[in-house]
Amino acid sequence: MNFTSGGNRIVCSRIDNTVVDDKALYKRVIEFDAQGDSVPSHVAARLTTSEVEELKTFISERKRVGTNSPEENLLEALPELLQEATNIIDSVESVNRSMYETLCAAIANLKGALDNIKQDP
Image (cartoon, one colour):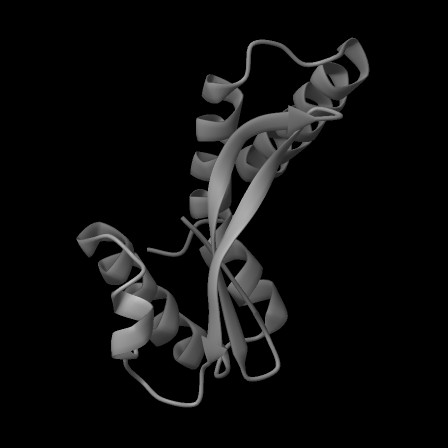
């Protein structure tokens, strides 16, 4: 399940097994007004139990993110993004050479930066 937000709207989408131009496609399940702190019943009815739990986490994180800097938000989101990318790579049969090389270079750059960063105790 993928959740995106823009303004006061949250869009819930499932990853489609179709891949176009080396990109996974998403199928919109439902979109709703995100003014509250809970999952509306009409939204929960369209999602699985685990998706509802994911959405609850997304909503609480979305609220908390407003208090962090953009850099902190990105770093906190990075592990989940990397896991999602791993899941997508596991689900496709192949990627073109250019995409492969771009991904390898980005991962090498990230690894280099992590190796050089100071870690707080």
